[in-house]
Length: 510
Image 1 (tube, rainbow, N blue to C red):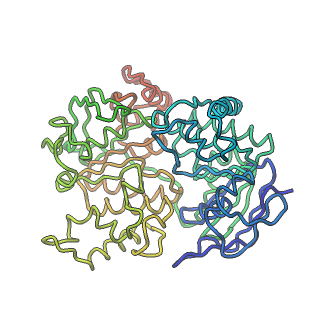
Image 2 (cartoon, one colour; image 1 turned 135 degrees about the vertical axis):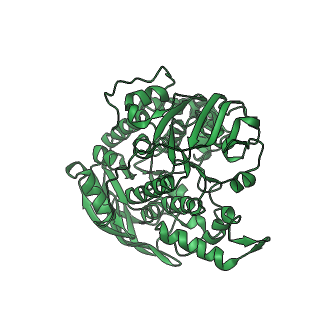
Image 3 (cartoon, one colour; image 1 turned 90 degrees about the horizontal axis):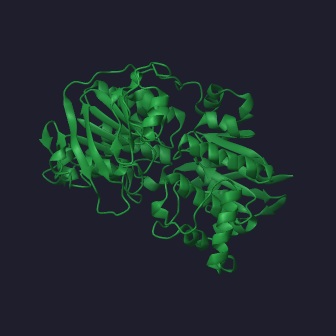
């Protein structure tokens, strides 16, 4: 018997149909992948199953019986758990306190009993957690464990995971997969949304592919090549390979000189004697596990933190005490890691979000907004970067994560910055969108822009970076041409082993 079965599920929004007559069956203990481009309707479908969204048409059957899920609490009662791409945790509460918030009162009444259950369940599934630790002290991977263990404590029978590996290190991915295989062996069904097709092939039993809100195909991932999976998602018109020539930069635009910094946030990572240069016409890539000083470094470059004084320079001009606005006047473009809230205002339209950072150009004059130019700018971003949206008046929060990412990056690139700083530029985007974004970054580099990319995607960094380094515990490794750094060497740097560059070419990316 199928654990869950969807028949003719349809969901419409103003201006678009998110799901159209979708059919989906997942058996008990099956790990089932749901694949598709950004905006294909995957997240909407999962929210329907979890009770966040109500379908306009169709029937859902749970363990053979027709049901209507009234909301997430009802879904959890049924045994349906979901871990969203963006976690819903309170950073100032402990692990146990966060988990207690989602449990029925009877189950969370005794905190001591709950803490013991958290220890037992997390250890059983290889995801050890300390229930007394505060969430803000946890790595991203550990925070994801909290979300998963919260589901496991409620006798989950179907676990939905939306892009679960996009924020994990390779080691954390392997730990997660062991947990999922153990769950599957115990009869729990898993719906797995991911753009990482090699992981889908390694983990999943079956896959359903969505395109423009409709089911476009099915396959057994283990019997399908990565390229075949990609073609099922994006069609035959999108190039799937990329081979970018490495470049040597010209004059230095961004300089950071002996930067040591301790944020006022007691839980922030202290930066220790960081020095780097980013030259016009090159991409410098910084690898590293989340929480090792990337956010603190980017805040000092962007101007969100103005305490760097004389240690941050644009074109030999000290900018450490300048506001973000003044740095943008000097040529800064910035793509933050957090799309909603920092990269875009959720409730504002795409048109207004374009104006947020583009107002210093031709969109305004003497403080007066040129509405026609603002509309044209937003439309140009949508068209050039293939952003799937209902139009320039669509709210930012109505877009899928990948489409919003394309919009934010397009907004910055079309302003022709002298320095573009990107944090995780292709996080959570499909293979076609990732190639489009990387192509535009290379094109901008070739036009003379200095580009700094911070990412946990090692393959991406090797693909687009001309020089590469790593950050660990607030310290920066040596910086070297990408083709001189093997993956093993980079991994050692990411772990804090900063010994001299190994010139042995074995394992290096050419």
